[in-house]
Each structure stands twice: as structure tokens, then as C-alpha cells.
Amino acid sequence: ILYLGKAIQTTVPPDGSVGTAKIANSAVDLTSKVTGVLPVANGGTGQSTALVTGSKVLIKTITISSDTATVDFINGANGVVFDGTYDRYIFEATSARPVTNIQNVLVTVATDATTFPTSNYLSVAHRVFTSTSVIGNDQVGVTTSLTSLQSMKASNDASHDGINLNLDFHRPNVSKKQIVGGSFSVYTDDGFVMGGTIGGSYQTAGAIVGFRFKFASGGVASGIFKLYGVV
Image: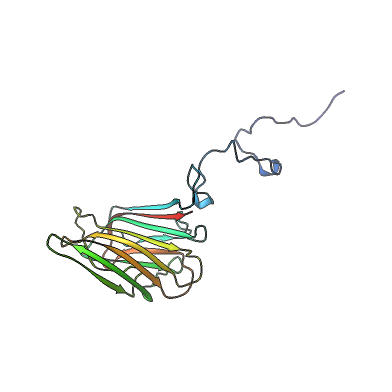
């Protein structure tokens, strides 16, 4: 008896691919035979180990080493996630220095991928400062930024540590008057060490899709900028 038919392929195809139509329902066991790290942009954590509640997931790092006008984190751009994926996001700026000496910091929200309002903010900072001969504290407020980092005199001297800033965003995708809290430290142009806390709000209710860090005048000369999601 002669049987005619198509030979059954029992090996992996030469290109290593298997069509999804050929995989039976519930046939993939994710507890084994899975390698690699699923990126945040694809719905993963970007981590190779299990996360616990409160863990920070690094979403994006931007390192500046030459004159850059602004540092932007926009949802959906360049691998950035800033939506309902996480309830809480943390922004960190480390050793940020301006191109132009003696500058204040501005952080504004993005209402879409290209629009960064520069008004209708309320923000306040409590500052403590000291030098070799002076110690004091005060409060400052502005309406042009989420951060009241005014009169900070950020130095462009590479021997100074610049500005360190942390901001905490909560559920940015929800339509509301967005509010942030945070802390900062800075070594000023005139030799003061300054630190404090910040509270700020964008006063137009609505979802935001990102934010921008910049100096009041001139560009960003250097710094490391990171965005985290909190599990």
C-alpha cells in the first residue's frame, strides 16, 4: 500500500519562527522556557527579577554632556512611559548644570507632545541655606513653573555639583489639577549650599503627558535625568 501525504515537520523551522496559528490555546507555559527581559514600553517591568510593592522601575535615562535647550520626558516618545501604567512616577535630576551661569530651574508640564504652558502654576519652596559665615531659611513662590527654584544661582562651574532635584508625580493621566512634591539641593555660584522641599500644581485641570526641565536662560550643559515608575 502506498500512502501519499505531506511529511510532518518535527524540528524548529530554519528561521526559528513558529506562526501563532500553529500554537494550541493555553499551550504556552510562561513558568519555563522563557528568557530575556520584557521592556517597559512593551508592558513589562524592564527587570529580570520580581518586583515588590514600592519598587522603582527605571523607565528612561537621559544623560546630557553638551549644550541642550531642554530635557523632555513625553509619553510614547523615545521609550518613555508616562500614563496610567503606574500610579506614581519619580523624576530625578543629578548634577544638573546650566550653560549660562547663575540660573533658576523651570519644570513645566506637557499637555500634549509639543505644548508646555509657562503660566497658571502655583508652587512654593522652603529653603535652608548656609555658607562659611551665614545660615538662614526662607520661602519662595512662583506662578511660571511646578518648581519654585528661584534665586538658586545655579553655577555652571564644573567644580560645583550643580542642582539635584526629585519630583513625585501621581496619576498624571487623570484629568485633574496636577500636583507634585519633591526636594532639591544645590551648590550656588556664590558658594552657598542650599536645600529644601517643593510643592507645586498646574492649575488647569486635565491629564498631562509629560514634563520639561530647563534653565530660565540658556541651555543645560550637563546632568543625568531619570524617570521611574513606582510599582
